[in-house]
Image 1 (tube, rainbow, N blue to C red):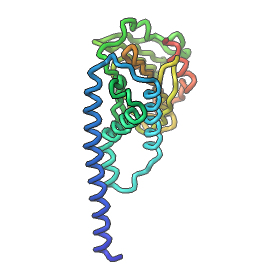
Image 2: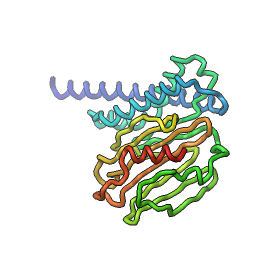
Image 3: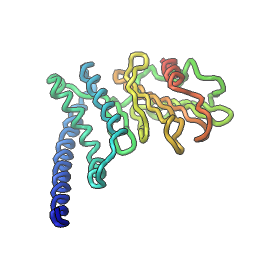
Image 4: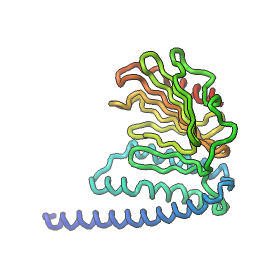
Length: 253
């Protein structure tokens, strides 16, 4: 194959990729628009089967994202641009194909994915009435952590713990929370019967090393709970491990 033939082949591949990306983006925007229309009914009940299928699909997408290496710069850029649209197609396709009754309902929990993170959002506009600052204080935390702040603003509440060295434990409650998922391992778990995500950055390098996060989604009461542990320095011992942060999250309920 001479140079001209190689250039023509590369051009054809790139053009096909761009066309497919455009199709995916258009279809994704249509799916997201349909999803926004459905979200106008916040009282609609989502079947448990739909919720589990969507969460499993999202988790598979995270695993693929963490293990896949992009082969070409062009394709890598296009994948970044279209990621939100493609995720919208994935979620809605599963729900609409497997459960026709889903057309009359809505996904109360929306997840918007971008190149290095994800936003968890509950379509209900206010947290549950029972939620107070006392509810956010866990019944158990490791020794050495002291409460240094508790506050609330609008529909969000938070508490902050810190050790003498500066290790932090942050607990937040809000209708929407954005989480950094770059270079992470994401595990779908349950906390007291609620769907949750364990986001592990303990094996990463740089300023994110040692961070552990749990995101708990409570659709029925309209909030997302975030529990984040972070050591005081990138080379500091990790005081809170997987079992500890799960225990902390469970002790809030």
